[in-house]
Amino acid sequence: MAQQAADAVMRAYRDGKTRQAMRLRLDELFDMESLYIKGIQSLQLATQPFMEGMAKKLWGGDFLKEVKTSVVDDQASTLIYRESDNELQDIAMFYLPGRDLMADQKTQNFLQKMKDRLVLLVNTENAQSFWRPDYQGMDWGDYTNMGKEISNMFKEQTYYYDKAPFQSWQMTTFRAYPYNWEIYIEDLDYNLVKIFDSDYKPTSNQIVARLEQYEQMNAIPAYKKMAKIMKDTMKQEEASEKVEPGWRSSASPEEIVKRQEAAQERAREEAAKWEQKEGV
Image (cartoon, rainbow, N blue to C red):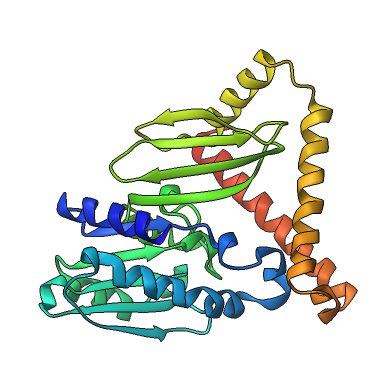
């Protein structure tokens, strides 16, 4: 994943894309089941070495002088700065950058000073004050205009690799610049099936329509896909428990419920934003 991402970034940079956004599969690096118990700082600590390693792979691993890492706010937003022999080849990578950090005047000044040097935003979707460049500022609350400006600046999503449940299917979204966006689902027999392949990122409505078409063509009843997603969820919980036995006992039942409710509310907010964006 790190080499794929680094290669995609450099291809885009050579095409003049100096401001880029990326999303990496953090579930391959951290037990995301435990995130709402352990917190964003634990996620940052566990994944920082991977992000630093990816930074070293940029420019094909050449011209590297030093990689400097700083946690820049109390929400675990992190600046990873790849210093090169030639300062024009320096690269700044903001990991888990939330809205608060991006709106800060110091960050805006920093972006201006970077001029034509490469700046990357990595996993804004997992930040404490999360946001998505493709929402065009609609998830910035009272700061929609600023959010839109920043989203436009980083509209080029050069590497995107995510796996998450969608419409009761395990769905994987993948894109590596300059190639197409690809959407896969795991069928009832755990085979990957491509349902979308295009030069643009499909909307949720387009994906839903394609899934409905797939289900009709294959005569898949709702109860079968629900049974599979429930089975998958149980497997994930068992795997999480196996990696770190008893982690759920570190929090009270009230806190676990509270965090689950927060996760559900976050999912509802995401869905509402998509509906607003797409005019549903």
